[in-house]
Image (tube, protein in one colour):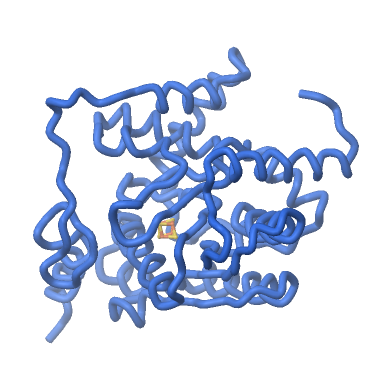
Length: 302
Ligand code: SF4
């Protein structure tokens, strides 16, 4: 990598993302784009850079911040305060949707009920739908996300920055999940379903995002979720970090390999329909969120 001064680094960082956006034709003029905003550094940098590029290159996008409140005291309540400050700093509208209003359960209540073992399965499934539902309420055309959550399951994990995408490829290989392996390197997903999601940071390294946020002194929240088990993705991450020591291009190589994989036509893949209960896209008659909710509600004391 070249050694750059701060100003040139900012410019190079922003231009690389602009190039990713233009090459993949991620946006069309006039679109409303929801930025999945958690208050963390990736989504904060994403919101900031998209605003800069939207102004610099006249993308003509209406940007909005969209946050999901999982109901985790001591974590999400604090990070949402950061998003509320970003709303003012970047002058963007903000919408918050909560698990409590959508499902009748906060993560705090879920953990109280089921303990700390499968909490991230619930959280991951619920978050994915919550983002879509919030985006539909806002009438947006697309959702952009900056960061894959660190939940231990693969339910809703789509990699968002380059490190995340590489981790997701490895995780899907280890799991033998061909359906997800095929999708996980796509820069835009979900075009067939509810709302397209895209990742402008697909080729952006985590360390660049950290540096950008740090030197720009962006206001972000960096505490981990108090319920985070950090297991599976953490192993994939550590493995890739080791690989990088002997082969510095490991991350981009893994993404490239993922992009080059193609699934044989004779492989049976799940077909997408809609959930009979809530109407959300699902490859089963009842979607995962409804199945999980049923279990939760059944366990409720009468
Ligand atoms: Fe949800 Fe926390 Fe698990 Fe992330 S780590 S999926 S926020 S419970």
